[in-house]
Length: 440
Ligand code: HEM
Image 1 (tube, rainbow, N blue to C red):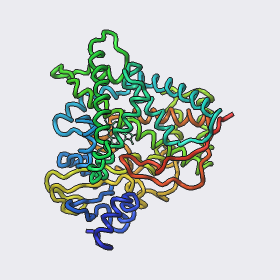
Image 2 (cartoon, rainbow, N blue to C red):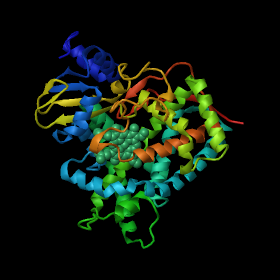
Image 3 (cartoon, rainbow, N blue to C red):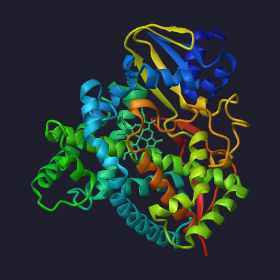
């Protein structure tokens, strides 16, 4: 047990600054240590082998941590939250939606959404140059995921859907991170607003699901893929409630993570102009002014390396939580059942024993001819059977959006480095202020 200072100060440090808390204490105490939290036993884990044990070799002993229960309020029993046989069956049904072959079709939509967004942004720039980059990356990734989910079928407008989803997420975050504020939320009507929005979104989703099930020539989007997915053995499809939960889960899991990754990547590039110059050269040489096709990705290793290095330093899912079902042993520690395992991806990615000069931005680490990354040392998308189902979707989206922004605009950031905020994903606190100029 980590024993420096009074327990309540340590517990407070864990909740208020989990990033530095896990990095600093891991350096002193090693890859597993226990931290005091009232009514719970909590272990912070940041070693590659130790995380691997929890997420892969002994994953059956771990469920998602109670934190995910709050997410259930909005997302229901979608892939992110479900457990056991139900999860296994849903994952099997949904996997083909994310096969490379299916992603080809979705990429066309991603590209046209990106073109529309860039046109919109350039128009906006004639009026105003001051933006919150985190909001902008969220705007485009939300458009992309909504288009990929529903094509143009949505009975609610994009803006309406987006606004309500943001409200749902904010509310869920409050319930997950500050449950003591719940009575206040009741008084302030926040809870009733949440229920109203959830009902409105559900009505819209069910309307779309029912309509789609009757279509003979359905569009190629995730809604169709989920509606018409059949189990290879039983030939059974998903009930509409399950489709609803998966749609809303894909929306929530599929845009904020990518948006935050992009915002940090652009900030890191601006702070490292020599790296940005190498990236610009690759974009110029391979693409010129056009957007990438999927076939271009193999010729753009530096672009991919920039994205990977960005997510090493600022992993959008900075930690993954698990609950031990039975007693276990991890890294020499006895883990009693019901313990919470706080798997710090952030501390893993900044471990000086694994990464040389861990805090500096060096995309070269990820180039194909660089020394191999040590086993299990890099996992922005998680690991094991519950690894992110959308990781190829996210990678292709970022390999499209990084060049698209840099071909069209130039960013100037204030000198002050944005503070990372540990909400569900790793956001820049208070947004990421930027001045955007059109590239000539
Ligand atoms: C940079 C972008 C992304 C990052 C960093 C990311 C990260 C992660 C991580 C770490 C997990 C594992 C969580 C755990 O083990 O508890 C996860 C799961 C998941 N992600 Fe992502 N994700 C990204 C993008 C996406 C996208 C684009 C989609 C969908 C379109 C998506 C859908 C999901 C789903 C459904 C799960 C649950 C999978 C399961 O448990 O079977 N994610 N993601």
